[in-house]
Image (tube, rainbow, N blue to C red; front, side, top):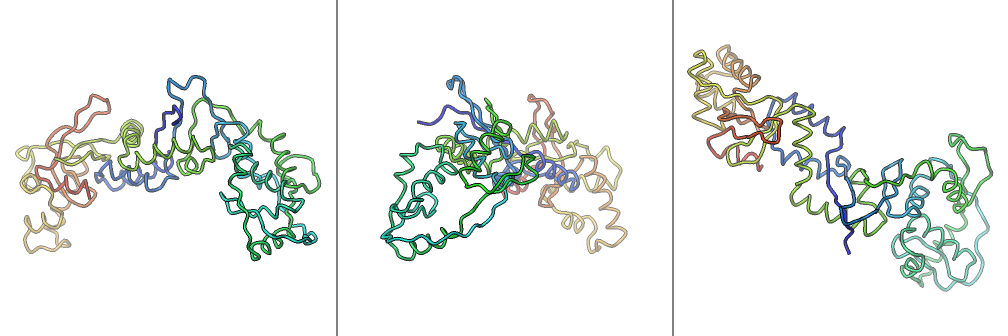
Length: 373
């Protein structure tokens, strides 16, 4: 059954900061849905918030402080800590040993990871199963993990296992760990050291967990992973929770403005759209406003060709018109969209408060179509 969890997605703070800087520098208006898609297409820029719903009672999580990884059990979190972060505490050393002798008819292979576990009649077989289970699949019972082991009668794989076996890996504590130096350890001994000396400080029991989306999609805890994946698939179809988070952060944290363009979606810009009646402006500015009111969705090139026919952009007359356009954009009297189209605002920009209304630009579908591009 699905876990009673509430899963939502937010933009990662540093990634959102970069997006906000780009919006502010460009002075253009961008579709909010397109911005959400940027984050969806790069899970490492999204943050996942996981918390039990009201029906979950006293449910809690065990979270790795180093990367945010979450498990429903303490044992699962310890297994992750040893598997994913052992290199932060130990340096690996290759110790050659004598090649295994005996008659091996088959070799066991982990059906989940492809790791060769060894022939069942070799003394290292059971220890290897425990090592792989503890380091990768401690969230499932050992008997369930054993059902994923397959026996393969392939001389090439048996030979590959022999080549792996002669290169035994040992672990030596790094000086940066701050622990007294010790001799080389087997994997199980290194994991036991981490459980005894690191786990208490690097694993936290929490009621609510926040972690990066790319980390959340690699969880070994299957019920938890299923809840995240189902929520992620819904978000890919329509990023509802991400849109809500983006609107709030862009308006309240970065003081940007949200408005709706024609029949299109919502747009965000750093300049508040402010309507200006042409009759209240000087003649040169009035010409620009009047043209764009009558021809919403035009580009700079089209506007220049209409107002100054046959004049190149480098001509002083063209520069004058473009200077007026820049002034109007800077003050919000003209909206320049992300694709270079221009329109005049016809209503009020959305206020920071939830009750704020929104409905400016274009009187045609040009901006609406660009919002869906």
